[in-house]
Image (cartoon, rainbow, N blue to C red; front, side, top):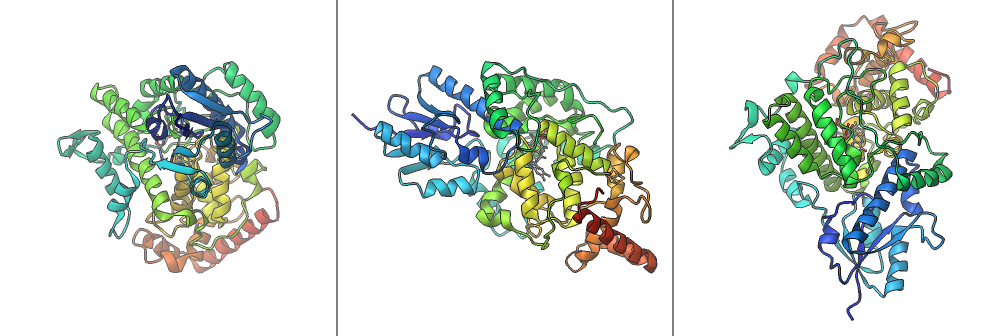
Length: 510
Ligand SMILES: Cc1cc2nc3c(=O)[nH]c(=O)nc-3n(C[C@H](O)[C@H](O)[C@H](O)COP(=O)(O)OP(=O)(O)OC[C@H]3O[C@@H](n4cnc5c(N)ncnc54)[C@H](O)[C@@H]3O)c2cc1C
Ligand code: SF4
């Protein structure tokens, strides 16, 4: 009899058409799935993220069995659990006399390297759930002076045919951002997000997570994530019907008490494999074709997926394993305690950290322009910032989190992703949110009692990095504004920024 091969399916590869399963033979091969301490603990993930992944894994394994696969499934609390993916493969290989493993490429260098060094013979397939392969991205990047997302995105539009009319973009433009990003009017409310009641499988997982991970940052209950493809599909239907029409208009808006506004909360499902990203985009395109949503909403949404999502993955694999340790701006400050729920007077940070703790979610502008912006202005070590984002969000996987944090948010890659750092003073936050109205600081106060810390740190950042950014055409105007400021005021701003950072470092509530 021919020896069986093991078919490795990881917790973020829960798609029936995943490459390793496609390459396998149901009559010969054995699927291996394992909940292991090495994966639940390489960072202290948000308990909701662990619960989502383990629940979805258990349901996926049951589905495979129903379909006729032989599945060896290891639960986290099984006595003979080897504790790591590599260890589980060895244990199952011995059990079944297998010598070879079919796997789909993992989404982070850490695991890719562990599999590469594995004593069994591994056949690693490319993950074809993405539109752009590594080779295609490398070819696109080859010889380019700068790797701007917008041009990559156009290639993906052409490749997929999404929102295309022949060779031209539908609606006459590639990008409708000029219609997007409106300030939130008073009382703006998004639709109620769909919530999924935990079934028996999820309830068991919740008990396990509660018993093992209660020390991790984040609230486990109430847990309302979708955990199988049918529920995820319902979440998609709900988004298209209720939130998508306003997605573009209020994409950058932030409103107290409104965690989602018009965002989709689909990233956790796409990232583990419960939803197919291309299918999601086709559904959104169909809603536009049916006249149900405006072009700025459909285009803006599709760009996030076939543009940004594919692009950041391309950068992660192009740049290699050292990407996460880059620190182009030499920032070394420790991540302040307020990121872990420590007290703060800054309303914007308090709101975003609180949503993160409760829901393992914050939308893009909260991640980029509140928590990310503050860490960058304050000069926090990007490695610490990276670890925080990897720990606290339900959708966090290194291939997507690291380029967003190290590159887009912290400029620690020296400008591969962002042509200028995403920094702002309080002004931007006041324009795009209602946070400042109930803040202890005054957003229009530039110095002295009650001055908004973002106002002080903004200038501190620009002056700290003057040599690097002064000649950047997109930033020159700010340096000119600084020069026009009264010399005494400039001194005061920098001294107050320093004093603020010292107080924060000393553990005072700021
Ligand atoms: C510092 C930082 C860290 C981030 N970490 C992650 C992460 O760990 N995992 C993750 O999936 N996204 C991450 N993002 C990107 C983005 O913030 C999330 O994808 C988005 O907030 C998810 O919420 P949503 O599904 O409601 O998104 P929506 O606003 O509804 O957007 C639709 C979809 O577009 C995709 N998307 C949007 N923006 C991006 C982007 N910049 N990069 C990649 N995909 C994008 C997502 O798949 C998302 O589901 C990060 C952004 C920043 C600034
Ligand atoms: S005043 Fe400053 S610190 Fe307060 S919410 Fe506005 S931007 Fe944030």
